[in-house]
Length: 292
Image 1 (cartoon, rainbow, N blue to C red):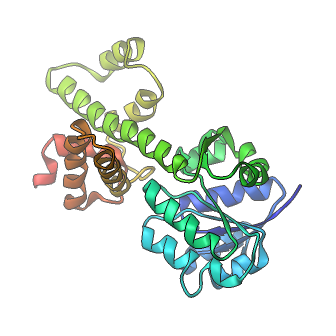
Image 2 (image 1 turned 135 degrees about the vertical axis):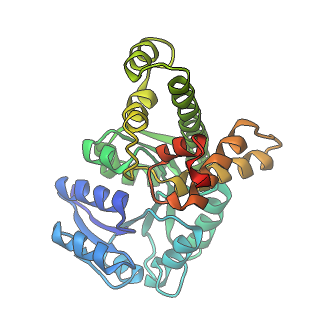
Image 3 (image 1 turned 30 degrees about the vertical axis):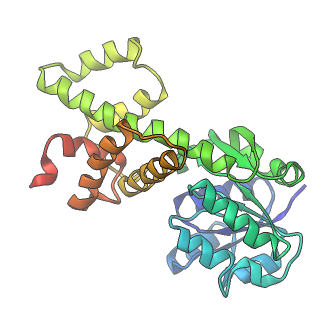
């Protein structure tokens, strides 16, 4: 069944998701504070609107994928946010990577306006959206998840209902903890191998055949070997997400050791002006290139 869907945030991920939803026959409305992103959205057959409030007035289900918590608050409970549409029964699916406590608080605020929330972060980059091999981790009520599942399940290789609000975000934080830290570790591994005189061909053959082999190595290897830092998952996002993991661990009495050390390397990459580059650029921090 086709739906009228609103997408808040038309960056690479939001635009890619909207594109695939349109392919599935849904009618897409979109909002972004960047006029250029709105033009791209319109060029792909979506209908841009002037605010998130208007978006909610036109749709039964809205989605958002944004970088900062203040952006989410502005577009949900702010003066021109979805809550101001006065539309009881609206479902909002929040896909940004945020702390679980943030999503729980947002759910309570939206509930007072008759809006149901799902926290549904995504694992996978925008190119994986196009290939429909992302994964959704979804926290929220069973019946609300059941309403949204037919929309998101065709977009992913896995869609898991993780439990109550906040559980989707917790699962994403745990996932990113691994992905972010392993990216830094693999950069160390490659730089050390190069300095020890190992060729890329030798490393590719031996590491790809041994216990290192797997999706992370296959994705990151060509970026490291070719020094290809074109943005996919940005340095600044890795640094932000690792900060969320550190804070969540402290909330639960856990003092992380590996993640803070890896995060310092991404923060150095940020300080060098590489915040928007692919996270693989952390390799150049290990090479000392951030120091000039």
